[in-house]
Amino acid sequence: MKLLIVEDEPGLRDSIRDYFTEAGNVCETVADYTSALQKINLYRYDCIILDITLPNGNGLDILRALKQNRYPDAVLIISARNALDDRLKGLDLGADDYLSKPFHLSELRARVTAIVRRRSFDGNHIVVFNELQLDLQSKTVSVNGQQVKFTKREYELLLYFMANKGKVITKNAIAEHLWGDSIDAANNFDFIYSHIKNIRKKLVEAGCADYIHAAYGMGYKFAN
Amino acid sequence: MKLFARYYRVNLATTIVVMLLTGIVYYWAISLILRGQGDKDLVVEEQEIFEYVRINHHLPQVFESKDQQITFTKVNGPVKREFTTANYYNAKEKEDEQGRGLVSSVMVNGINYKILVVQSSVETDDLIRIIFCITIAVILLLLLVLFIANRLILGRIWQPFYGILHQVKAFNVTEKAAIVPQPTDIDEFNELNDAITSMADRVKSDYAELKTFTENASHELLTPIAIINSKLDTLVQTENFNERQSTLLNDLYTSVSRLTRLNQSMLLLARIENQVISGHEAVNLKWLLEEKVAQLQELYADKEIKVTVFAEEKEVQASRYLVEILVNNLLVNAIKHNVPQGQIDIRLTADKLVIKNTGEDRDMSGQDIFKRFSKSAGSEGTGLGLTISTQICGNYGWKLEYAYRAPFHYFTVKL
Image (tube, rainbow over all chains, first blue to last red; front, top):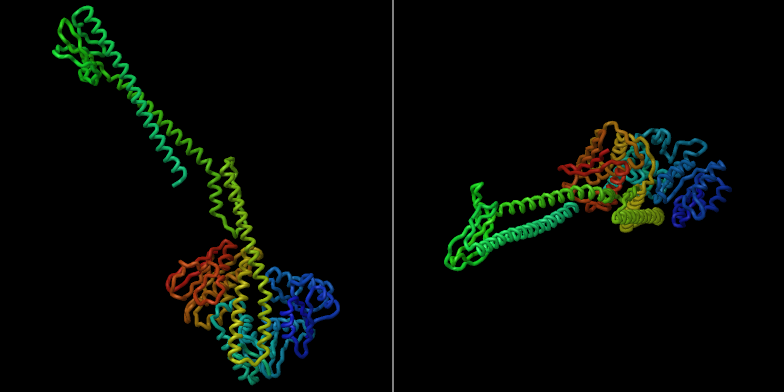
């Protein structure tokens, strides 16, 4: 996957780049409006992670330029402006998704992966990891071709893990991904543990290897 | 006490005192003059007697005059000349009347006689009384007219003042409506108009500035928080933490996520107060409620809370985004402040949404639970949830109320 990160804050830009950089991914970064405009006129990306407030310009104008030139690049807007209007404007202009700052890198990654998958030309809606298969259309999970019954939440959680293969995902990130602001209602994240226990049990019982590992009491990691 | 009443009371008291004093002086003066007049008549009569005696050397025949009676009495010693009060016998009426007398003496042929001239003072008294009554009547009439005139004029004059007062009472810094100066040609009220409108404008602009500041500050904070968050996410990928380090990291995560939520709540509040969140669509509250309850299922199931929903079809015209926040806040509160194996009953009818939940056995209606940053001890929430909810309700003319009837806490949104 080839990504362009348009973000003026070096701290955030580097973190995103580091998180996405791995075998098979190419990450390019730019810090301002003009260089972003140059990049999009020269190269095509699978996804552009676009900040709205940029030095010497507005990210939405880059989005407009993309759409005017009919460039097919997917766009995910990240913005500190937690405004509904901005979100709607961005999506109206043809952005694929919107994520307001601050966010967890795992959330960003899940969103980007989802966009890229949706956009892939081969129309592939099956995510495969060894013997494990997720069907994005019917939202089902199967192990060695055998369907395993998953609840909606369990499916969402597993998909989240698979988008963040090899990364430690914290309990905070999981909770916020699944319940958003409502997570305030929970006094602790213990119930996440029982969710994950269920997923592991179901997968192992279906003959799948146990890919979900607890990571130092902070979170979990989906890996070989 | 009303200014009117105070003014009237003082005015009335002074008027009555002054009028009474005037009345007394008036009475005293008139009676003094009339008495002087009467005494002069008596002296004239006395002189006539002296004159008669001097010429005729015997006492005059006593005859009944219209209002004077004269009696002569033989006396041995000298008589002191003086004015006295005496009884006057009215022959016509056959009764004694109050009168004024002059005691004098005359020497006729070597014999000393005491003279008593009495004149009835009834008519004089009547005259005084009539004058006094007319005076009092005029005074009372004057008071009455003044009272009515004052009432009418003052009532009208104070009108602009009440107009302003009414607006000041209804004044709310968070609302856009400004105070409208009351048209008046009275200088004091014009001054009041100017002072209050300019004060209200100043308060509003200060408040707007403060809100803008809050919004900007929260906004500026988002970027550093985003960096901290992403750096933490990056840090946990470096692996190989010992238990102590991972505890520290967990604490960091928790605090950053609290900071994030707090900051977002502040931003949201500022934006709702500024009414910059637009959107007016038909929102089906019943569906929204059921959807939210389903979404929160794991959260309340974890505490083994029993949730029942009774909802009638109900649609409201509002921003879906805000209504979702409102419903979410109320439900999250009901879960968060609940007890294990507790209960939540949600009831939606045409005119209200009631969410009642078990919880800590304590009535909180005396506390400012709707105030910013008011939260229960040990709560990790932002303390802004109910403030945001109230503000959202306010935007749509709804009312959010709290009541406690053991063992339930009731939150009611009057739609």
